[in-house]
Amino acid sequence: MKMNMLIFQSVIVILSFCISCNIEPDSFQVSSTRANLPIVFVHGTLASGDTYTTQFQRFSSNNYEEELMFTYDWNTLNMANSVGLLDNFINSVMVKTGKPKVILVGHSAGGSLIYNYCNDALRAGKIDKYVQLGSNKQIKPAGNNGQIPTLNIWSTDDLVVAGDSIPGAINIKLTGLDHYQVATHSSVFREMYKFIIGDLPQSLDIIPMNDFTMGGRVVSLGENSIISNVELNIFTVDPNTGFRQNATPDTVLIPDANGWWGPVDAKKNTYYEFELKKINDPNFRIVHYYREPVLRNNPWIYLRAFPPPGSTIGFLLNNLPKDDMQSVVAVFSSNQAVVNGRDLLKVDNYTLSIPSLTAANQTTIALFLYDEGDCKTSLDSKLIFSFLPFLKGADVFFQTNIPGTISLELNGRKLNVPNWKSASEGVIIPVFD
Image (cartoon, rainbow, N blue to C red; front, side):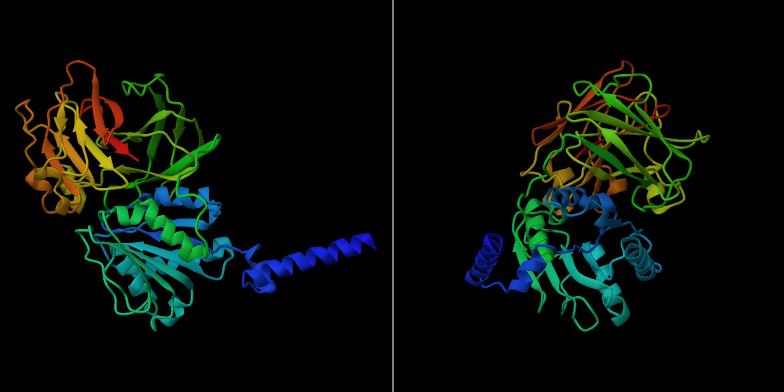
């Protein structure tokens, strides 16, 4: 009898709570057992799925299931059958997860692709919600009849795409964010999470884990094609010099048929080198990636190999020096542009965040640093990079006569890398995550 009375009293308390909060009892029960849908993230021009790495980790930090988040990699320089390929990918996600619909997130050109994709009743029926980030103004929400709930986020300081309100969508205008930050910033995550989940996130931070793994994908730079027969060697490095702590790799991996590698266990507060080599191919350009320490599970660490010389990007990169008298460095800022007057980027004693290299309207994400042949640094801009967005080149000489360290700094964050010989030892890519 006493037990029945306790149960009755508990029900009354729950009902009183629901009434006081204007929540129906049924919806209270549903919200406590809400099932998430898969999220498919679609990147923009010259980018890859790692555009969304920080957002993946923020969703994960707020308990969104990692196995329900996917990246769609596409060649933004070749639009042939892009809608059909995206449809195939979405179908595969629905089969893999057993879910009836997906949520789409598109940045920049990825947003244009998604709008084209959704402009068909059958395809639109597969989409639960759509988040547009820094993409073109549209006349209606996504869907052939504008039926897909759409969140549209843009920034007044985005100098690549001039966003604007979309009639019928939820519109969020932000300030102070460059084009790339519209995909990566914590304030953008807040609005995405609220739109997708219906509540505010508990945290906007990437919450560190004690035990975690890392993994990712090997693709060609700019085109996202698969590079077969690649060997990935992972080394622990000294953060003060960038030198390997052991001559042999901690881990040796062969990416799968789709370029995916890992997961492998990672250590807290540890700096790694990721070395890409092509098996039995001396013409393959070795690449050494250096990154800041991983904080929590990160399955989207992308490593970009140089594409073949005959491709659009391959033609450009084939002009980088292969000269054992100098190092070639490509510094990559993965979550923002480097903007003169806002950011400070330095390599050794040289400031790179100057108007000719990092003006706001250039939205510079990657800087290729190499010498023109006179063994001197002038910081002159390389004209060969002028016809592509987001990429710049500068005249910087790094000697290789004596093994040493190249020091880089972005807004107070530091990375140190060895001065590898560019012909026999490969290209150096420091990444500020």
